[in-house]
Amino acid sequence: MTISNILISFVVILFIIVFTRKKKEKIMIISEPVVGNGNFDLTIVDVKNDHKIEALKELRYITSYDLQRVKFIIDNSPYKLFQNIDSEHAEELKNRLERCGCIISITETER
Image (cartoon, rainbow, N blue to C red; front, side, top):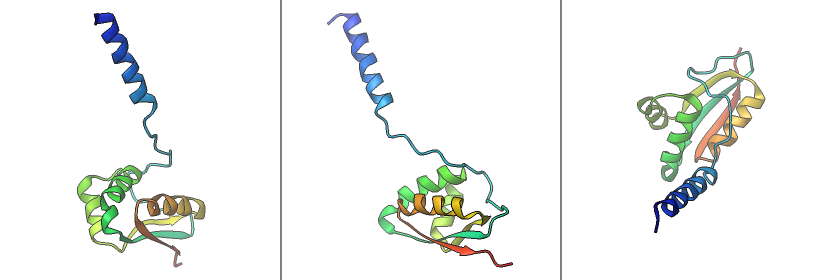
């Protein structure tokens, strides 16, 4: 094999890896707990044992918290994660987290 053939093979493999990766859906990424103008609170009630790693990764992606804080949230559920968010955002986050094995509760904010 010549160097050009090796280089072409490398480029093809790299192209396949880059463009066949599973891409994550884009959602609002936050660095602090959401305290908005909405009427709903989102609470993580529990996480299924066989899905804890997936839930941990998803919570880190959504909240931008460090690993230690996300692990604390998962281990100490129920935990109120978001406060005073609108219903659309709450439902979107609920669906996303339930796909990762979390049991989620959305409650109306007490005024």
